[in-house]
Length: 229
Image (cartoon, rainbow, N blue to C red; front, side, top):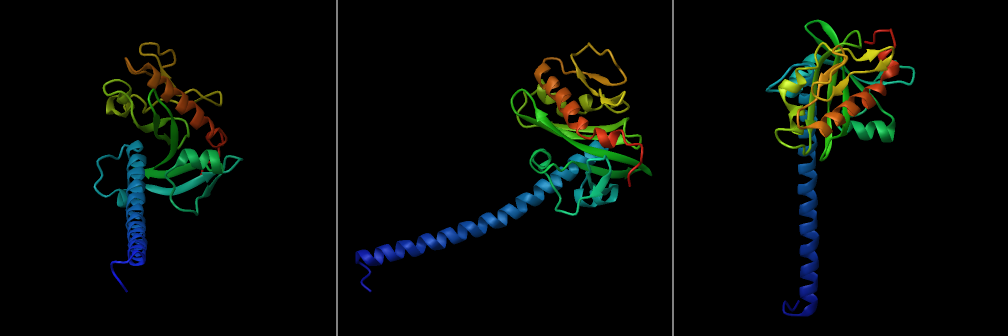
């Protein structure tokens, strides 16, 4: 074949495009698997953080040590084991698939329940996990994070100081979710409320709305007196 002809140039270019496309697809597929695994491990670290298990070196090992079940809540408030893949997009799971996850854990011989929560702050998404004691009412621990809240202000929801205000708080009052965040210095129900972040009012309001909306989705489970395995 004449390598100087137009037909050779077109064929050569086409072959190169196919090869490059194949290589890019292969690399993308390989990276996606690694990225998905990293997201899964980070999610497990966050769940552990809500259980006050932090700075873990091997998230997979620690998660398997403490978390005994990835469960889904049924309409009647009972739990069924999640037989599908480990999920990380819990807002999508709830809104699109009506799947509400509950993680059943055991810490120091005591049962804990961990619930994903998600909402909106001032500048973007906020999310986290709330761990309750076996009474399904008393907060054992929380973990919150954010996409783009203001450093030193709304971003303080990720601080140990703010999160440390929650353990011991109650979640339900007369069957309704009351656990929440109020304007700094305006706590009226100290058993249920924590002070908001000074200078981070909108983010604090977002956390309050997130807790009430997400935990209310689990009300049938929280008010079900039968302890779940």
